[in-house]
Image (cartoon, helix red, strand yellow):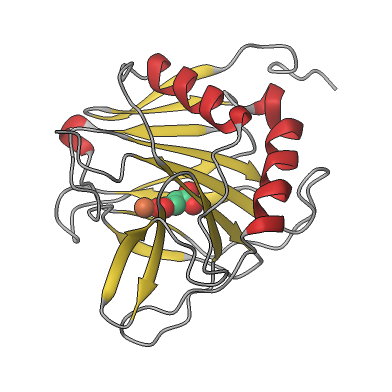
Length: 216
Ligand code: SIN
Ligand code: FE2
């Protein structure tokens, strides 16, 4: 069968003001990224965090970098210590930093310096309800989000929860970058459909890079 995209380079799709999808941007490096995910999860295992409201999240999560996103009874926070291991989160793997930097440059954010990477793992049925990424003190820094493994439907709205939603399939290797005017836009992931991916098995993974400390 003729596959029009078989040897094509990544391509860009505008998403919103300040936001772009870099289709297949991470594809050529996926195996190295999976090795790095395994190395991170050996130190800080995937776990299902419990929201302050007492709800166990369907997405399994871990982090790497100086700070990690986590929950406790009082709210959501970035912590230098993994509450599960009581040790610092693993360092950001070089394969992660390099990819994130290149994606940020391609999207027009050459000065982005992430100090946190949340690693999400979706099993069939797992979802992330519509939310804003607003736990970061410096909203001048964008979000860089890398999709690996099984495809999922990404919802991207506006500043208000009930603004109209775009629904886009995010596939293995796709990178979404949002910042500027769309930095606080609502977004989410619809329940994952079952499937098998040659590198990721029955899962979808997502790497979300953030600047979680204040840049003075
Ligand atoms: C997130 O909103 O933090 C994750 C989005 C995704 O899994 O693509
Ligand atoms: Fe998010």
